[in-house]
Length: 270
Ligand SMILES: [Zn+2]
View 1 (cartoon, rainbow, N blue to C red):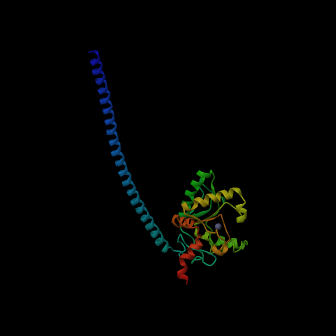
View 2: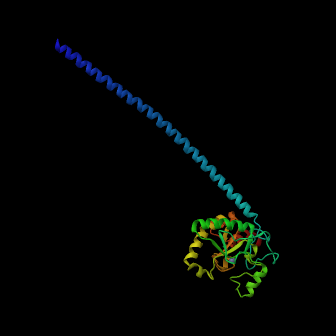
View 3: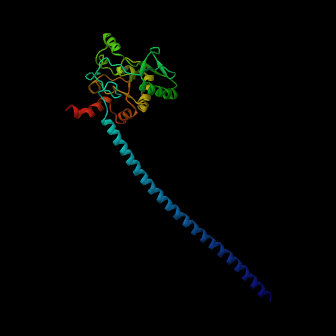
C-alpha cells in the first residue's frame, strides 16, 4: 500500500518536472522564432538602406558632375579683358585698356580686424574689401592677430612714383599694368624678398594659414611659380581677389591665375 503511494507521488513529480521543462523549451523555441523574424526584418531594412545609399550616391555624383559642367561653362565665359572685370588678367604684356583706369566703389579697408599699416587711408574695391574683412575675422579668431595690409589699391600715378623710385620690372609692374590698380589686391605684412619672407617664422605661419584658407574668401596668391610662369618673381605677400569659385578652383588644381589664363585663351591666340 505504501509503495503504491510512493510510486504515484514519484510519477506525479516526474510529470510536473516534465511538463514544466516542456513549457520552458517551447518558450525558447517561440522566442527563437521571434528573433529570427526580427533579424530577417532588420536584414531587409539594411538591404533597403544600402540600396537607398547607392541611389543617393549616384544622385550626388550626377549633381557634382553637373556642378563641374556648370562651373566650366561659367569659366568659359570669363572676362579677362574688361578693365573692371573681377578676372581682368594683367601681366607685363597685358595692361589696362584705359591705362589710367580707376575702379568704382573704392572703400577704406581699416577695421577692427584689418590693420592698415599706412594709417587708414588704403582702399579696395567693395567686393575685395568685404571679402578681406571676412577673412580678417576668421584670421583673428584662429590666430588672435590682425591681418596687416602694407599695400592695397595703387593708382596709375602712384605706380609712376614707385617706378621713378627705382623698383625693377621683375618686382614692380609698369603704370597701367599693375594688379594693384584693379583695387582687388593686397600685399600683406612686409618682406623685401621671398627668402626674407620664408625665413621669418611668423610670416611663414601666416602664409600657411593663407594657403589653407584664403581661397575660401576668394583670394589667390598671384605670383607663386616665378617669372617665366607668372610674369613676376614669387611674391608670397601678394593676394588678389578673384571670387571664391575661381580662387578655390585654382587652389584645388595647384594652378596660378596666369596658367589658368593661358589655358583658357590658348585657342584664341593661335
Ligand atoms: Zn603686390
